[in-house]
Image (cartoon, rainbow, N blue to C red):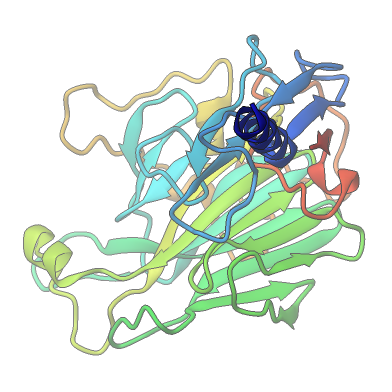
Length: 334
C-alpha cells in the first residue's frame, strides 16, 4: 500500500511539473479575434523559447479564429508566404511564388506602409554573356516610427559557420549584440527587439505591434553554383540573407516588391506554371540608399499616419522571458 501511495504521489508531481512548465497566453490586444482568451501551448512545444535552435517553439496567433497555438521553428521557412530567399525568390502574401532580380549593388524597397518601410540591398554579379545580374539580398534597412535599423551579411571569401557574419546598426550607430543563443537586445523604447536564435548568423527582429522578421545568413554553396551556373568568383561566397516576414497589420495601401502582394486589390501578374515567374518594376522600387524612404511608390512617413489596417494580423513567436511587457500584446502565464 505504501509503495502504491508513493508511486501515485510521484505521478502527481510529474503532472504538476509538466503543467508548470507549459506556458499559457492571454490574448490582450482588443484588435484580435481571440481577445480575452487564454491559449495553452501544446505538450510538443510547451515554451516560446529554447536554447536548441533546431527545436520547435510555441507560436500563438491571437487573430486565428480557432485560437489554437502551433509548434514552429524559429528560423525562416523559405516555402511560406512572406519569405525572401535564394536569388531572390519571394512568396507573396497571396501565396504566389515570384522572382525579383533587381540589380547588383543597388537598393530596392520591399515593404512600404505608412508606419513601416523595409529596403533590401542586393549583391551579385553578371557573368560574361548574360543579360542580367545574378542577385541575392545582402542587407535589410528598416524605418520604423522615427528610428532606423539595419542588418547585413558581411562579405566573406569563403564560408565559415563558426564566424558570425551579421552586422547591425541602430539610428546610424553600430550595434553589438553578444553572440549566444537567446542573447537579446531591446531598443530604449522597447519597440524593437533583436534576439539571436542561435549563437551566430540567425536572429529574429520584432517591431512592436507591426512585424516579426526571421533572418538567416547563408552562403552561395558550391552545389548551388554548380546547379545554377552562377560562376561565383573565388574571392566571394556571396553571404546573403534568408528572410521570412510575419506582419501583424498592414494598411490596404501597402506597397513594395513584397508588400504589394498583401494588398486586398493586388492582382498578381506572375504566370502560373512558369518555372521562374518574374515581377519587375525595378525603377519603381529602386531607392538611393539602404535607409532611404524615397522611391516612386514609397508611402512611408516618419512617425506614421493612422490608416485603416487590413485583416492581415499574424502574431509571431513571442517572448515570455522578460515578463508580460515583452509579449507585445499577449500576457504570458505558467
